[in-house]
Length: 176
Image 1 (cartoon, rainbow, N blue to C red):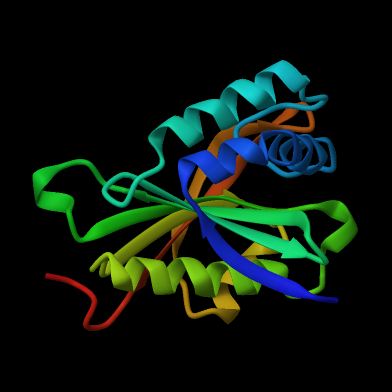
Image 2: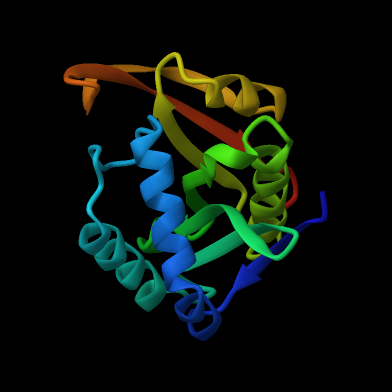
């Protein structure tokens, strides 16, 4: 397996729009709780990625892409907080791994790349959330993320309202 993690600028991300759409649809349709309900329509996935691509930039959003043998197999995003008193903070979002590539270390590699990008951007406080009970919880804990707590009945998933777990990580020495 030839794994590469890199960050895409808007133009390059746009050139991979179809692959990003397919990744999001695969993730949602295979149970990922990332803000969409299955079955995810192509048009909805495309509109989402077009919005992400329009927002890409060092002061707003970074997009990490994992490729395996040249195929997009996963993504993660670092979204900077937009408030003046929050320039040290960012949210990690849409950590997606295609179902054909799960349990191979892509999620961990994406998270390490996102944390390194956060340090480069002088972000010292990172936050994220994930559906309670998902395998991603073990990933985040294994990478040193701290579990804050659960917000019950936060997201619809498989026809029920499920809790989301909030995590944070402090990146020593990265802040202003």
